[in-house]
Length: 273
Ligand SMILES: C[S@@+](CC[C@H](N)C(=O)[O-])C[C@H]1O[C@@H](n2cnc3c(N)ncnc32)[C@H](O)[C@@H]1O
Image (cartoon, protein in one colour):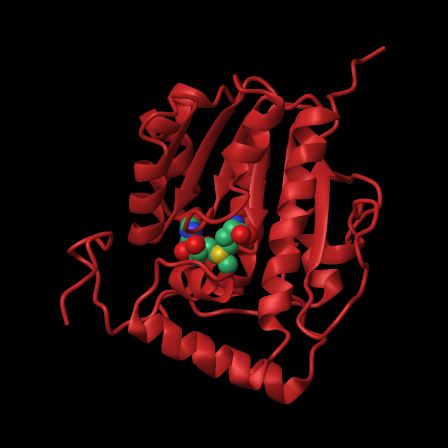
């Protein structure tokens, strides 16, 4: 079957991708039959997954709004940014500050192709293909450094990303490198799937994700909290997605597969007396 015109030529349509599965789950249009089949198998086993995906996007929107409006952040590095969908980070940011800079980074070729197409007329934002595990290359990428000045506070987003990073690739070490590159006053926004759902649903979901190039790993709250080491947690701390500063009228409910969400703040270096 020919690839749709939006798909880069170098993808294998038979291998589902987590980015395109997530696009399907969120009701997007940039996925293939293999992604749809996998997403349908996942949601048949774990019917709360789409709701959890929407709760994650809502957290992302609230977190970014907080950072641009209340924390005064003017530059955002969105790691594992995904395929563009409703409420993209640069759209949320530019509603409040049209001059703020946004860089999207993702390992998935469709995510980057779609993002670059969307941003063709938006000089304050760009999208770069990159691997979180090779963070030094990401931080040195000329397209990243053209928009992000690491000598000034930056918000780094790792939203629904780190559950694709098994311990074997040492995500904590990568986060430490990132932290070292971030100026005092910077923020790390994190959400991560927890491991407290029904065990049979969780193991079946993990098994299905093994068919993608980015298998999933679920972590406990304590393990997720450890990923924010070195940062001060912004109120209300590391909580379930819908519990993080809900908007007035939001329904705050926790269901199977709801992950954890939090924002870490890198304190300003203390001045020796
Ligand atoms: C569930 S989506 C999250 C998208 C967006 N951050 C959100 O929360 O709505 C996870 C994304 O992480 C990307 N990803 C997985 N492994 C990655 C890696 N090693 N480096 C960069 N991106 C990665 C996937 O391609 C996918 O687009």
